[in-house]
Length: 187
Image 1 (tube, one colour):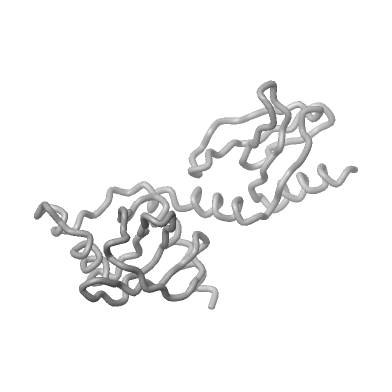
Image 2: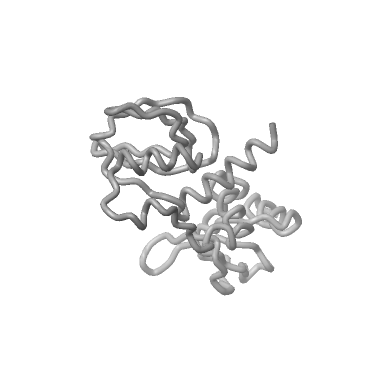
């Protein structure tokens, strides 16, 4: 048995998602999901979108299969997304400050500090940070930073005037929060 098919068999036995690398008419393509069956002619996969949503069943000719990935960071994150769909796509609880109108970036940062809410701050300098606001002055703020995998990534001081926009409770911040909670539960 080849290495690729033994890896596919492992994904079936462990019921873990796999990425299949396939030659398609428009170039290489990736399929994510759970392997249902494999034989000499075909591989069947219960497909999942990159958002963790069900995406049907895909049957691929084995002659088009040129690679497979298993248990990588992307697939572990996808698995958590799939298991957390209700949390990820629940309605956003909108703080009262957003109903006042004409909120400044500083007021939104203050609200994130008050609520201890994980946010994503995007800067004009082509930088973005996930984190919790820890302190704010008239011109700066201190953010406790986390990477996209929910792992602590230090502290950062930034100028308020450099904030381009803030994402509050969107899909990406929710997945980082879920991963952060999972990371904390391990320690």
